[in-house]
Image (cartoon, rainbow, N blue to C red; front, side, top):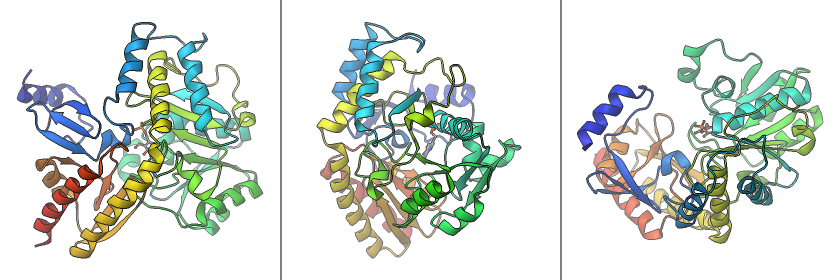
Length: 394
Ligand SMILES: Cc1ncc(COP(=O)(O)O)c(C=O)c1O
């Protein structure tokens, strides 16, 4: 099929739930992708934060090749070598104390598991989430998600969810009742605008949850796996949650979610109370093992910290230069640039000049590049942004 046929076919048959960019991407390597016409793009979307180890990392490719010849499917009612290898590696990078893992297939599923687990462990129903939060779009995860646009068409959602403003410990304290099972929070808010919390917020939440006997759930679906300059963002504040969600990047680009929990918390699930047919699929597990090896061997969190600092500095230079840039923020290679207007034209301008960037709400340009991105590629991205923002600034 040619470009036009592919676009027409997807538009006709695929559910119309994604805002499409008019490019057919067919190939990727490291921080680069190519379209069907051979045009090259620097990928600062990283497939919405998935491609942390880069596109088609040779170690992931090799692990998938090896496993695909051996065994593709194996239900978790049997033991499996690829799965146990992956679990060993994943627990070796997990925050201390989170010794038990439920493996699923996506971020929303990792959150669903956390919500069910909180209810089951505590025997209570209610969950406190943050204003502006994004936790996914399945019914439970959506109930924790803030945005009206996502929620309202699907009312009524799961009962018992309440939203409080972030960075406001008093409001959290006031919202907790004897029905509260857990507080859920993204350590750095992603989709809701790339917002780093105030220094006391996450440690304060930990204290309140301990005091009130409420579980603390961190949604590290976007922040996890080295993205912010630590393996998990919670390490920036030395706070360990009771339950933690991870997905996006963990299997090097293949679909996988993981819910980590304290062993005594996960033990609340009885057999059959939570499962998924694909949980711990061997092919995905082989990819995840390779991705974890790459994360550790290539010191990707350190790389995210260093290159993130460099990238952020360059974005700040642009903010100095152009008054339409309101603020630059973020941690590691999870960066946002808030503009004084809708960023749609900036996304398109970048796309036309060979750079893929994301939005985060109406007026924030978001950068989630692979952590293997090169400094020289960041310079090229900055050059393109300079040109595109310069045009808009006139
Ligand atoms: C913090 C967070 N939680 C959950 C999700 C949902 O993940 P998925 O799209 O894999 O269901 C996302 C996706 O962007 C996310 O950023």
